[in-house]
Image (tube, rainbow, N blue to C red; front, side, top):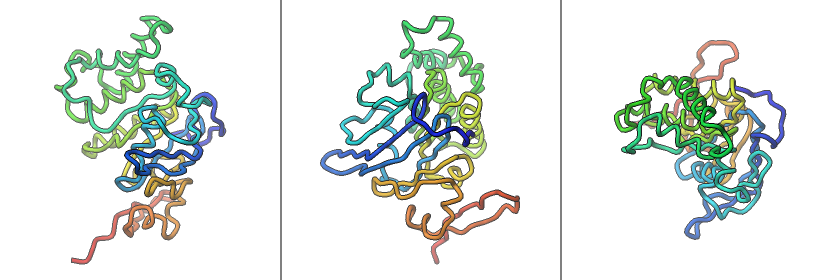
Length: 270
């Protein structure tokens, strides 16, 4: 992952200032502010209902009607057309594509729609084949999405986001429902895309160990607000994890120099 990029908001940076959202008369996000430098890797953590998914949907342009400033690549999200927004931001929601009647290659090829009329057919083919090769699913090109396992479908969704050619990729709980082997594979793939292609990654997760081990910066949310933001090691300061998740954590060290401890929620007395 890339943690040493210069701060800025052109190209594929993100800048959020005072972001607030109300749905059904209820405040979902309240005054959220943080930034992601171009090419950085950020995790957003917090409990259920903290506003994490709504935050991603705002950045992706799926949820509108927000108040505040939300810049992607230096442009206000609400001012962009759907195609312009898709050229800047790719969004991988929770879950899988389900029973869609498409082959893997057809599904990934659809992500090239923002570039129709701009990119050549050869460019589109290279983007699709390159994304499938990078994610290791070339052999599945002719298979129906519905025939894939959960881990394979997740790879197809990530491949679709890569082929889209956006400088920012948003991922909502990308390792949910995956076994440990597929979790590690998915995390390493995301890190590789960030490292080799300079893509800014903004990822939502409940897994604090995942966030601490694979991010440049963590944004911790609670009740629709940013409770804490900073480098992963800062979460180890007393009180923060309890405040964010509502539980105490035990710490276990791997014994490796410079490696952050593994955090495990304390067991309740039986």
